[in-house]
Length: 131
Image (cartoon, rainbow, N blue to C red; front, side, top):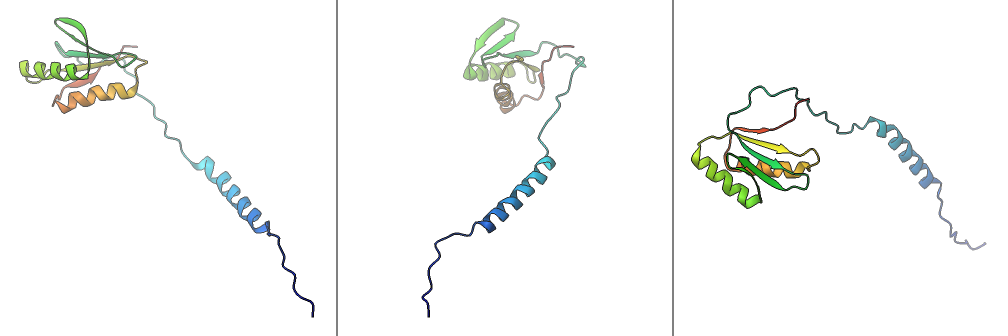
């Protein structure tokens, strides 16, 4: 009887079949995936502008300015917290408007809104330009 010879080859046909099946599955499933897109609302004009609001401006590079009766001055995050706490001590529930620059990052505006909400302000709004 002849001795068996070992075969040193890998059969790749099953791997190719599996890859083709996966390719077809991804080709069919990809168009069905929905992307997360949102449409931001447009504002014609605000209903009522509050009287003497505290105005906080968020600049293009994330710099902060506080605008009140005394005028505008640049502040950092800790000074903003101290300013808002002092304003809340004077007036129980002052209105606060946050004006974010068009090119300011979303994160910097949200950071300011978060600080305002942490201090317990209820009347907070975003300032927008009219169309």
